[in-house]
Length: 221
Image 1 (cartoon, rainbow, N blue to C red):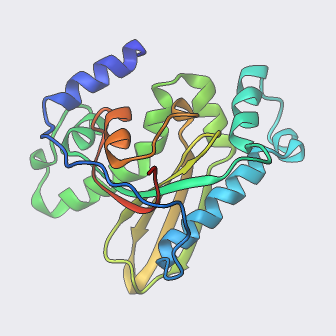
Image 2 (tube, rainbow, N blue to C red):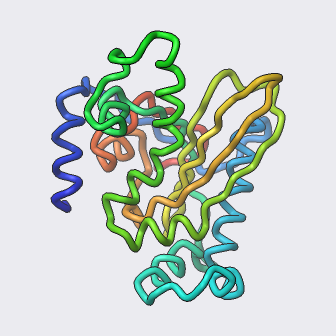
C-alpha cells in the first residue's frame, strides 16, 4: 500500500463504522436500468474510446510513456467487459478528507449540501492524486461531462463501473433545477484489475472511502 494511501486510510478509519455484508449477483444488464445508470454506462464507454484513440491522445499534446501506458490500460482489450455497477456514496470520513480534515458541521447549515456536492465532484481526481501526477494527467485527458434531464433522479448520485481488465470509472451525477443533471466521469487508475466483485470488496479496496454501497448489476457468484 502506498504511503499516501496509508495516511488517507488512517484519517478515514477514525470516522468509519462497520459496513454491511457483500451482495452477489449475475452479471446482466437489467431491462429497467435507471436513466442515470444507463447514461453513466454510455459515458464510461465513450471515455474508454477516448483512452484508446491515438488521435485523441495526440490532440491533447505529447503525454509521456507512463501516461500513455495508463491510457492503454483504460482503453481495454477485445475480451474486456463491464462486470459490475455499484451505487456508492462518500463516507463522512471521505468528506472530511476532501475538505482538508474539516467536517461538514463546521459550515453553516445552508452551505453543507454544497460542501458535500463539491466533495463528490472532486472525489475521482482526489483518488487519482493518491497514485501520483501521471494518474491525474491520464484521468484529465479522458474526463467526460454531460448535461441531461432526468426526472427520476432524487438528489446527487455516484456510480462505480467495474471492468474485467481495465480501470474502473466513477460517474458523479449532480441534480440541479428543473430536473437538470450534470454528470462527470473519471477513471480510477489505482484500481485497474482489482477484484471489485462484491460490495465488501469495494468497501475494503477503497479503505472505507465509499459507504452505502449497493449493487446495481453484476458482481461475483
